[in-house]
Picture 1 (cartoon, one colour):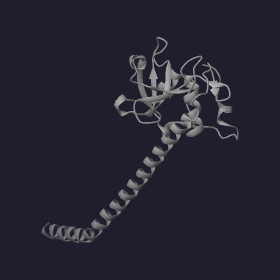
Picture 2 (cartoon, helix red, strand yellow; picture 1 turned 180 degrees about the vertical axis):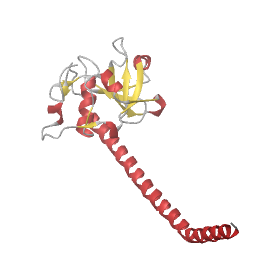
Picture 3 (tube, one colour; picture 1 turned 90 degrees about the horizontal axis):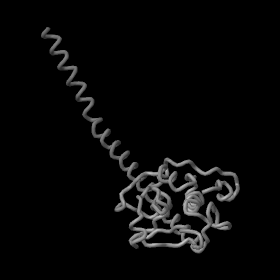
Picture 4 (tube, helix red, strand yellow; picture 1 turned 180 degrees about the horizontal axis):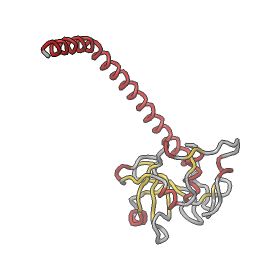
Length: 195
């Protein structure tokens, strides 16, 4: 038994002596892998920031387009959810549901204080939850297609009308959305009609 114990201790010492030089290598590899991950995370953050900036700039380019119930393009006009859907499809290449309440259900709820440009803001304008939607542009403002007789415009969420009707904020998770079909047509050609 004594020989077995000594043999075990000698073997354990030999194994630990062999493992010791490789430990820093493992740490170095982990550090290198972590640095690579941080670089990739930074690239993803930059891409998302670029995408949301592009989304807001694109949406601003449609200011003045008239409201049209069921409208889904600049040529025909937009309703609120048609505007949001078209902006995400044209800029990000993602297909969002057609109606405002469906867009709310398909996106991640966030706190109002966490709003970032490109997030969606919802309002109760028809005595039902999530009946109106717009795109947050920053500084407490959003862009939307408001109502018949009006045009796509930017409004302040702090104004009494919008403040009283605010229904929540949502974030479109780029990684979880269905990509738009690539058919060689304009994105508006792939949008369904209807409110």
